[in-house]
Length: 473
Image 1 (cartoon, rainbow, N blue to C red):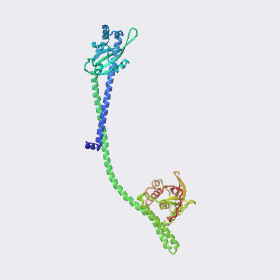
Image 2 (image 1 turned 180 degrees about the vertical axis):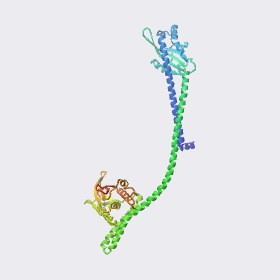
Image 3 (image 1 turned 90 degrees about the vertical axis):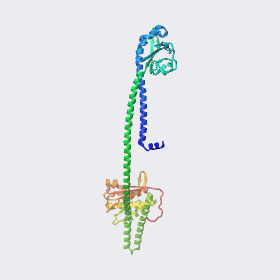
């Protein structure tokens, strides 16, 4: 049993076949039974209406109210015979009875029944005395017919209420009961039910096979798609592995790019120190710049080592204007033939909670990008207050007078490895954006109305920050 259940659960097609077969079979049985009952009741009601019209016509023509008063008289019985015996000519009629308002049989084609009273336990007679004719299938099962010698065949008992008017204008109510063979009805029902069950069975079978074919097709298609997906997944894994190797190569190139600028600055500063070796003060100043470049490289290496830990930054209260000036100075020393940089900042100091090494890196990339867009300069940098989505903050705006940003470039501006410059890595702006987001800010780009491009580093404002004494970054 357990093994059968395990196989069943592992086979969706088997589950669908058995469940759908049970449901469709139940639906066919329930609908066929309901319709057969409906047809039986409809046929009985139709027969009852025909009998009713016949009985009422005969009663109005032949029955008299005074016959019900002395129903045992011979004349009264003759009048009843004359009025109701013609009902025997109706096909299948086997018994006739006439009841008065006291439920006493006043006439019958079986004379030994005259004078008998029916028991008062049959609820359907209340409907008859209320003037509603009715038909009862197989009446021999009722208690009132336990002593009635009716033929042992399927019967239908029709009750027809009638009203007879006497000469004084009074009314006498009575009920005519007609027992008729149900053979014709049962034969019709049997043929109808056979046809009904046959049609329902054929319809259910067609529905089952249609659903089975549909489900099997979908299931096989699902298996096929799963197999294709497995093959594609295998191919995809190989492609992803190749992409990883390619990305690693590009990342190495970007790291080399990020180190190249400060190292070029170190070389340039070293050459200046060699040429001015006879000027101790100048050499000391150049060595300080070299130290700063080395510390920036060391900070970048430390950030790269932490990159696998979600590139955690080390925020600290930082005076932004001073950091921008240091970055501008480092840019001027690092880039040969660097364009002029114009910086505007408020008189009061702006202190924000940021990682100075990362922010210096992002800003340097933006300044370097502006210099490549317009080598003749000047490059504009402005520090100003700005709100973003209702939050107070400060923005560092970097502008150039180059060709600006086209719609196509804007679409892919911060996409890693996208570049329009020959020899570019396409990682400078994406790294800058990543850094700014790590600092809790936003990086935007657009075109200036008067020409050129504009990049905005927005950083949120924090209250009650004080810059602690620290070494230069």
